[in-house]
Image: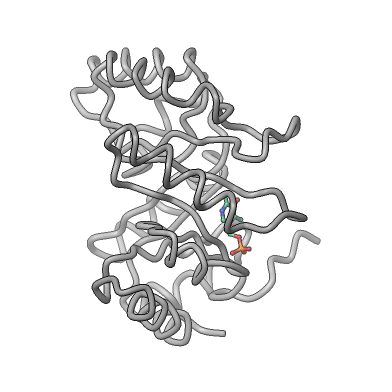
Length: 217
Ligand SMILES: *Cc1c(COP(=O)(O)O)cnc(C)c1O
């Protein structure tokens, strides 16, 4: 696959869903990928990327930002409170706000720094023990708590359980967002981004389909 092919598929999915073409943001998930591959996608003109680790992002994006204008990097992986300050300086958006302690830390830092990235609240739609995110039953209260802290909550994010039908999770996330008046929906990955678009995704996070398989060797 390539960036062009994925963009074409994304636009087709938008059309089929009766949504405006270009209404879904394509986050190219560059974690673990060699810099040459990332640079190739930057050279094709793409500017929106996703990383799941603060440290890894800190090691490559400041340099890419010097080389390319308009770069936009979103944190899509878990965030420890002791890395929150660094994350707020590295990323334009954080998709993994998932607990009160983190929300309070972000609010305090936002005051201090005078700015805050766009925030997405991660919902553990499958209620999986090993996965981050607030439980669906706790989502409304947590969204209200974040709003009470004046945090710029743009939407919700989920990672469906691998062995389940993703549609159910996308539909649930969309429903929670709607009843809370949130418009952002970060959902859909390489294997199911078209389906996510049909459920209203505003941000799809696509890694391997753009860059090729990640080599963790
Ligand atoms: C790695 C990752 C992705 C991208 O996964 P692919 O299957 O390579 O598209 C999306 N979202 C999150 C949270 C990830 O960690």
